[in-house]
Image: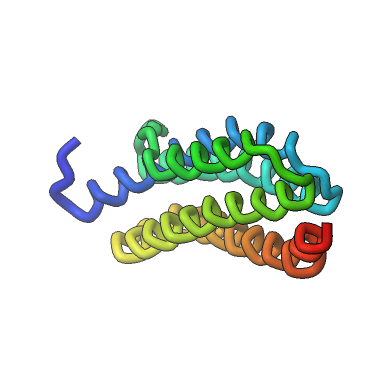
Length: 164
């Protein structure tokens, strides 16, 4: 696909995010299986359900634009998830694993926040109001998840990892 216009770039970015969310859905159960903190496990469970809805929401975005949903392989997400997988393969105490999984998850969230922020800007500029509203909803969920992970890390997980 040639990228000649902002709309072309917008579509490219949407396909990348669609692929990223699908990759994340495949990886999340592996990450969740390594978690020992009940609070963190619950946060991952909630975000997995949100991620499933985010995939559906992206499909609605594509539909609102009159195009078929199509995913591109997101190399950035692939790298972030490979890094998380490598981390999980190491031998460590369980609280340290939990702290590291929060770090991995927040890297993913920050990537998604950047991506969704960008497509929101494009959608607004291009006048895709329905797409913008759907994308903003996902952006807000990603920001909330990031804040929740920070709170869990700062109020319990990091202390457990340090004092273990």
